[in-house]
Amino acid sequence: MNVLLLGSGGREHALAWKIAASPLLTKLHASPGNPGIGRFAELVKLDIADHSTVAAFCQEKKIDLVVVGPEGPLVAGIADDLRAWGIRVFGPSKAAARLEGSKGFTKDLCAKFNIPTAAYGRFGDLAAAKAYVEKMGAPIVIKADGLAAGKGVTIAMKLEEALAALEACFDGAFGSAGAEVVVEEYLTGEEASFFCLCDGATALPFGTAQDHKRVGDGDTGPNTGGMGAYSPAPVMTPEMTERTMREIIEPTMRGMANLGAPFAGILFAGLMITDQGPKLIEYNTRFGDPECQVLMMRLKDDLLVLLNAAVDGQLAHMSARWSDEAALTVVMAARGYPGTPEKGSVIRGLDEAASDGAEIFHAGTAINGGALVANGGRVLNVTATGATVGEAQKKAYGAIDHIDWPQGFFRRDIGWRAVEREQTGK
Ligand code: AMP
Ligand code: GLY
Image 1 (tube, rainbow, N blue to C red):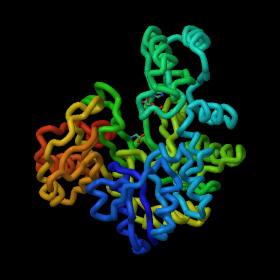
Image 2: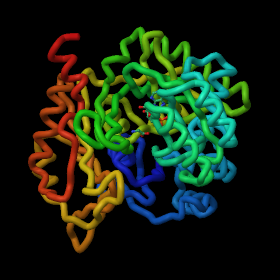
Image 3: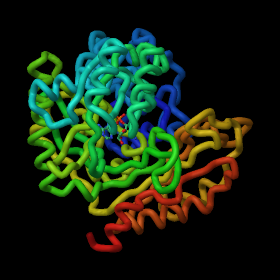
């Protein structure tokens, strides 16, 4: 098979690594890719926003499958447009990607199909939103409806913060993504990421993970796209997984089919495990980054076979096998992230770092004058496996010790919650 992979992050490097291991693969192309992905794929600069350019490339290169990494192109309808050209695509339609593209859409789906989630209101104007917030009181959560690169959520512990967040949203802080706002109840519990591979009718559980969203040790500082992750998530016991499938995922699959928008692709449920059981915080319609990196380390089966089955509606006949080992990834970021990262600093020592069995996935890297340099916020994902999360953690940090990049930084406590559990046996 000839495959085209769209995207340029650590998530896509992990997907490329796993796809390249498939005996089904003839040739992998990636756009735009990065130097890590370039080890497995021919990189091509396509204007991904111009779907007919992508389609023409697929026809010229006889691409048998397009794998879409990030949410932007999915929400913009790239899967529908390529399919109209007869090209096979792994990723949801524009209508199904509303599960990520509109928080209000997902909340209404939950209400209609009785899916447990935080109580909420949806507002298109400031006065009505303020009145609701004043009625509900703090703590309360304010979310821009549309895609805001993970920045559209405010957890307001005080009423004034909530009102200020509403004003910022309606003032255009998130552009058109904030023209509508979802206000929701503040949930408490432990968060987990739950993934399903879906073919429109069947959802196949596809691994669990926990990520660390805050930039600083001890889960402090501003939110990021994720500073590290581990898999599996200990809180997702077999019982919790069964409840999540029955109470959240399966009603979502039926609901989407019912609305004429069956979901095919990766359904990524952000869950809060509360005293009453699992509640949906949000859906994403793609793999998580960096969650994908730890999932790919543990997946024993051929990813291409599974992606093909999802595209062809054959998941009812499939299973996915996972290593019993834990996997953990530490994100190395460029100074300045999650604000404006410094670009261009030279990174050395990756071969030494990888020599002990760690996988170093590239995110924002580039080659400049023959040297590997930082070219984005999140730059490297140092990933390892072990019999326990603690062991995987030790290996990942051991690998980082070999990386010579003074301008980079990373959290030193990725996996702390799971390691603490392992140590105390709780
Ligand atoms: P989201 O982009 O919706 O995943 O929100 C980002 C983060 O905000 C989540 O991972 C949670 O940590 C937190 N969050 C979102 N919604 C809620 C909620 N209703 N209650 C508590 N925390 C929330
Ligand atoms: N790591 C969270 C995400 O990919 O949305």
